Length: 298
Image (cartoon, rainbow, N blue to C red; front, side, top):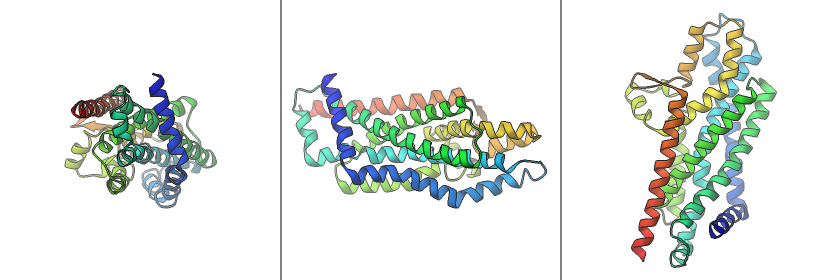
């Protein structure tokens, strides 16, 4: 346990010591927040304004609804993409030969793999919390409707999604061994993940066949959990303002708060269960590959 703690501490320190990597990871969610506000806010607002034209909805409630969707989109992407950025140390250690040194040391073979995971999770979660704080400031300035319970659940959703993002990045980075490969994978994940998880465009807007494929991806349910807890307060305020249940359901459907798996409704606890199983499965494969690789070297 002492060796594991030292390795985790070493990995975290090396990340923060690399100022370029640290500020890039930290600035990424802030840039995304600005881009969302600049380009997607009007799109989201227009998509809500048209069906709610016949109701007396205050600007603040509408801002809260739009802000909740923006914030959930931001964290859905940040939790995964920043994990890939934070986990670059694992590949850099392969390049410098540090991994080979640890493999021939008396350290238990699963400890380096776990230390990379825990360090990456710690760093990514810190940056995600900074992103949540920035998003909450934006919501407080435009329209705050999240309760304390909603906020805590939103942070918990982020926690699980960061666990998944860290496990996924660890598994993929296991097969990488050069700086060029890191850059290529990072670029692909940054450009593609936001679409397939429903952060940039709701999954309900995709073709039916693609929706069925995406319904197998854990990130889909992570985004939906974030949506549910970021937008619940605004939707409740709309209900109290006289918006019919039919309209509320339609908004929940179009924003992916309500998801279906081959025509069956997916409950909140289903989302948590599937996401948790996915984390354990991916993490288990990652640790198993590391153990097998070290045994082969021996």
